[in-house]
Amino acid sequence: MVGSENTNNSDFDLVVIGGGINGAAVARDAVGRGMRVALFERGDYAGQTSSSSSKLIHGGLRYLESYEFSLVRGSLKERDVMMSLAPHLVQPVRFLVPVYAHSRRPWWLLRLGLYLYDFLASSHKIARSGSLSRPEIEAIPHLKKSGLKAVMHYVDCQVDDARLVISTLLDARARGADINSHHEVTGIDPLPDGYRVTVQNKSGSRDVEARYIVNTAGPFANELLDRVSGPLPKKDLRLVRGSHLLFKMPEPALTTAFTLQNDDGRVIFVIPWQEGRFIMVGTTDALQEGNPADPDCSDEERDYLLAAFNTYFEYQGQTATIDDIVWSWAGVRPLVDDGADDPSKVTRGVRIIKTRQGKGGFISVYGGKLTTHRLLGLKVMKKLASLGAKLGPAWTSEAPIYGGGLDRKALEELAENGPGILAAAIRHRLVFTYGDIAAKMFEDAVSIPASAAEIAPGIPEIELRHARDFEDAVTAEDFLYRRTKLFLTLDDNGITAIEKWFSS
Ligand SMILES: Cc1cc2nc3c(=O)[nH]c(=O)nc-3n(C[C@H](O)[C@H](O)[C@H](O)COP(=O)(O)OP(=O)(O)OC[C@H]3O[C@@H](n4cnc5c(N)ncnc54)[C@H](O)[C@@H]3O)c2cc1C
Figure 1 (tube, rainbow, N blue to C red):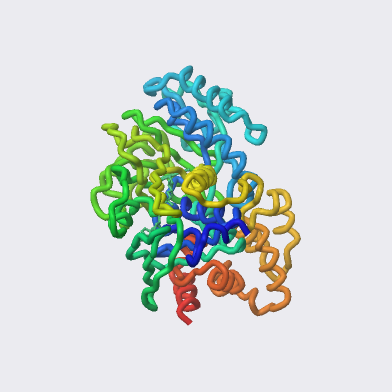
Figure 2 (cartoon, rainbow, N blue to C red):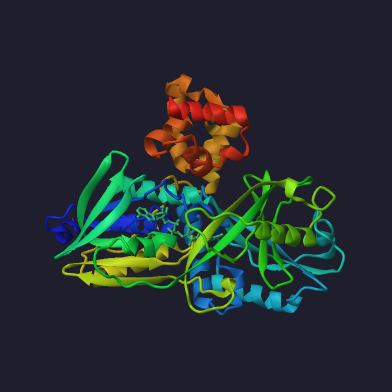
């Protein structure tokens, strides 16, 4: 095993700190290259930024305006890769871009941008962009048509962000990584050839030794560095909050997403979500002044998004109000401060800094995107190699993540042909949540019929057992907010039943 050459007497070759998407990507890549890896997350997996995103696997059309061509190209290429590695979680969604007489960007500029987007993607998996015909435009429900000059279309992908993190971590665990939630790193002491890491959980504290540390604490990257005895280099972070609003899907349903140009030049997304039951509207770019662990959509952001939505849409035949908002969420982007005045112009690129420590070393990761987490893993592996780590060859470009072994057609068949003891809608949801792992749940439901019983409407016990026993869900919230988004559709009795199950 390559990793054994890294260790000396250390417990691990590598300790990864932070169980968001970046930590998950690093742990998975490293364990697959033979390193002995532990990951510590102080809360639940994906409990911070990685469950609060816009949930897109995309190139980032708007970044073309800031000439971030290589970021956009890398992201678009990765979009194709993610479609094959996680087909149960990543799916194409069509976006419409309406252009009005008053729009800041003329139609020809947008057309050019979309040509460039197609060109940078050079994808065989995703349809090219184009323009809608007049009858097609007239048929779009809810969109205001007065002054509407043209509507372009293009395709990007949507993902369940928290599940992407959890599935990546489960994959790392299946390959031998020691993955831990509710373990906070409280101190790091340099050793001659690596570090001693103090980890605290509810039963107490313990020390582990590792040659290499990777700090993927996201918005808390610098806070973590303050826990290291001895100085390590830091980057100045700009904590930029992005908020979203959620509405019930109006009738008739919107079947596409929208990229809207707001009057101030910002881009707002309107995206169908949860099998078309809801639409999300976001996002803002506001500086996060308070604790990044607890970001909230401010009244100002809420009003801004409501106004933007109402500029373009009629909601249920009228103007959407605060009362129509069923949920809102906010996340904090840990962006490297490049001096840009406007938070939306701060680079979305990633920065990685390394420090040698004898035969070991410390790496801090700043920034990044959900879309390019696998590429970030590759970059961190290069840095580890430059610090002397012995690593096997790159392997992640073709290995599906946990649950990702079947393509969408095969997943549909799995759901269709699953056991009748589970209702068709439940089979479908399980398959497009857990991927091919649902096959095992189906087998168990047949062999132990009691486990197919619904603890709350649409939620069989077998799913709760899987969440608790294999996905480290400790509370009803872990299950309802991150393993799934079932809190959105369950009534109070249903939520109480799940809480009761987890506390029994
Ligand atoms: C509003 C918004 C929308 C976005 N939309 C998109 C999008 O559509 N597509 C896209 O590609 N990207 C998007 N992004 C970017 C993407 O979500 C982030 O880049 C990514 O989630 C960052 O992941 P991370 O692992 O660095 O951070 P996090 O997910 O925040 O993970 C860091 C983890 O470290 C843990 N931690 C901190 N300190 C310690 C400690 N001492 N011990 C143990 N654990 C610790 C934290 O608890 C946390 O879970 C969006 C970001 C935001 C904010």
